[in-house]
Length: 301
Image (cartoon, rainbow, N blue to C red):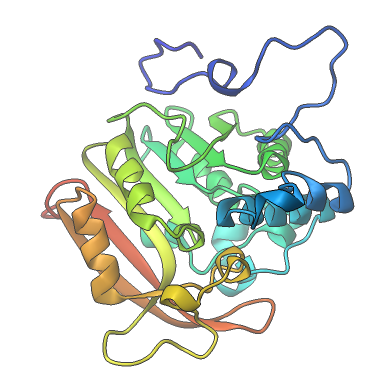
């Protein structure tokens, strides 16, 4: 797909792949590292000791690189606890083992054939696979993830399921490899909570949506009427590992203000209540529907 493709996506080759030398077989990740084992992945992107703490986004990427190499996730919810059996039908077991989330965006939105859908932080590709079946051969689904290891995993899943309308790319979702105004639906499952600068991510989400587009975001959100659950970190108390585990939350009003401040016309929230993570943590999850313009007369969901 070239840069002038009318579907609106920038070629992966244009964006991230330098001219490869003859015989080159390793495909480096975003920091030039191509780990083959979990131990090697844990060492990728490590900052030299004299450069101070590793940035949160680097810590998060390293964590998910290692999980992808390991082949199983210890974080967030198991898909079987938040998705319906119908949604998970025919999905490979190894995708389910590696997938992490705190809700089911695909259960919350009615996709239509021919739509263009993007998953910000696609991980092992579970939501991509579900979306691709719903938009059909005339539709397009693209995944963006910072972890090259996760991108490889999602590409393998699409190949094994024979889904040719999926394109998975390495990228920072704050500066995604997607043309502005080219997408009908953005979905994101327990990913925005990994970013301290959520407003920057939400600006990027709004920018890629077409007029009338919608973002469906599952994230950790708690009630304005009380303190966060015991396992949820908030404000300056959150550390890098809290972001990697996606247990950093905000109140409903704080999240709403961020969405509207990022350029969306309206926002609706649906509480999913308390959800249990694989590691035993319990968080309050919500589904956020962020409309590029005013809410449609007939809701999408």
